[in-house]
Image (cartoon, rainbow, N blue to C red; front, side, top):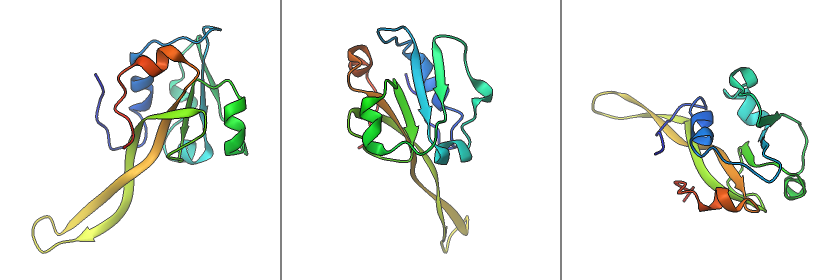
Length: 131
């Protein structure tokens, strides 16, 4: 079961924990990009082992496929070697309308959570996807 959330990003750890997934080393590596970190993901709510977190900056998109991250949390819809599992909406713009309320907040996907396609157990879970 997945939560629906429109706020960056406090729901993300709940989504990731629901699977209790493990890779061959039994560690779950999560990479958080600078955009996501600046918009609400912090290491404040980190869990203990087997969860490991990286906020390493300046990793080229092409390099993620060579890393052993279980999950990527970032602003990119697609990344080679990873499947988009779900996304979180964020603020896009204000829109005026003639009715009530006079101002509406438009939202759009801002942060994407990807899973490593080499992790078979992860790929078998029923994720909502990003289409």
